[in-house]
Length: 272
Image (cartoon, rainbow, N blue to C red):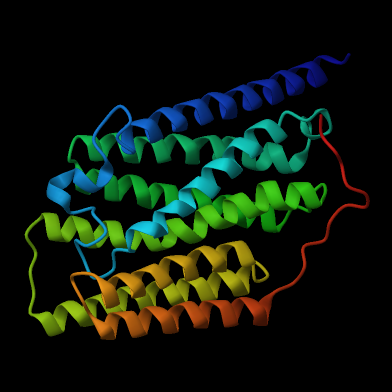
């Protein structure tokens, strides 16, 4: 085997191992953040990260989406070991960033344990940027199969969409934790503005990346639970709920408008 080929294979193996180790680290962070071996996130930073701390915090059931995201990350971690994908350009272009995303995910959970809420904002912004770059690269690289489309594009699409909503909620929580207060009208207007920002971002993502339903579904899911929380829980705000519902519908409509089926390589590859 040519020396250059050996070096490339070694780099591929290193990438695969790094993704796997990052996934394990992500699991550890999750165990800490869910309270299995640490304090539940909602109870950190004086409760500023709870589902009723701010007007843009999604209601509790919204966070079940993490179960799907984590299952997808686990599937991706196994999938990237498939022999036919070891030298895949797609995996080579996204694998390292996938590992970074999982490390950042765990770091976010770990820093919230220390009540470092503004550090958590920095981490989630880094995570958002990483996921945006992953999806951008996936958009330009044809999936190897329909399975690859679901496991890779589906997982990171959901991940990006949800983190887009979570980032706004995180920033709002940090401001609350810092004692930033405003008149009720200003607070509602700020919440509406935050929803509009994510909505515009969702439209941009749909237009740039061919209307990815996974991204739109996660954003709409987050907005729906923001609306539910503001209609049924404290702090109540019908105005915020209406804007959130409208935002969800707009993002879904934009995705339908710009949706283009991803070109898939002929024949599905079935991994081991």
